[in-house]
Image (cartoon, rainbow, N blue to C red):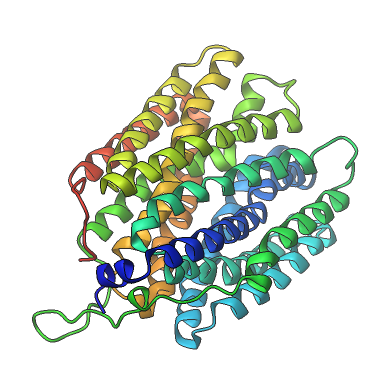
Length: 409
């Protein structure tokens, strides 16, 4: 059955079922974000500073590099396994259990090498949860609500950031108590959708793969999907640099800024992005312009990065970061929703999203090399100018696909 015919057949039931699932699904995705945002932005750098001393920046780069390799492999592999087994829920729950267990095992590492080993295993388990979880949304949310789904996904980085502010409160003194609190938050967010939600599958979201003119099945994403991949990859290089080194950048500008203040500033940026992403996502659905909000938000992200490069005071730097953080959060949330629209094969959605997840992990491989080659000699200012240029290129790429109602090829 054609997807438009199916939508007209029972629009009220389709809309209600999708909305309930999207709310629980957005909470589960937020739980996945809680699993890594507070740890990688605040807790891990602080722990590395304790274990590595003066070599903390270099070791953080090595840990990020190794973790990104594990995440890249895990995202594709476990996404593909969830395709083959047709069991997203089971892989999500297994990944959740292992992720929480390894998170709680982090304090057992008393040196950098042990910490590295645990982080590699943790990244595999984390992507065992995140890969199938990403594909699950594509299985159950109609294309005409992908913009709204993207808007709801903006809650994920916000809740991830505020969980970072929570676990760094002064009452949670030790590394162990912070990790235990984080593990409880992750579980409470992921379990409702995976245990209690019983969404009904729509035939049009799981139709057989398309056959090309030569009689062969499309193997990999192409056309708009490739350009969407490139645009997100370029924006994610900038986001990854700030994600890993925001702690050290703010320390260089204002040495007296505490961990909790850093986490709160990040939280403000991603929280303000929520209503903006919701409005733009719903607007894109109604006007059938899925790519225009992506263009605008990436352009504003580039402007924010440029302002960060020119910042000459702590207050101006904070405002510039807020501009960058809000625009980038909006872009990434809406991009995640619209990516599900353009993937050609529903039976390999998990694998294809694992390939798209390389836009999250490959920048983490490039960023340490880029940062370590630029920052020691030229400072963060030159790095931010370079990253702003990459984001401008992403905006230009999106301009080539900003047309109405794109298909999947």
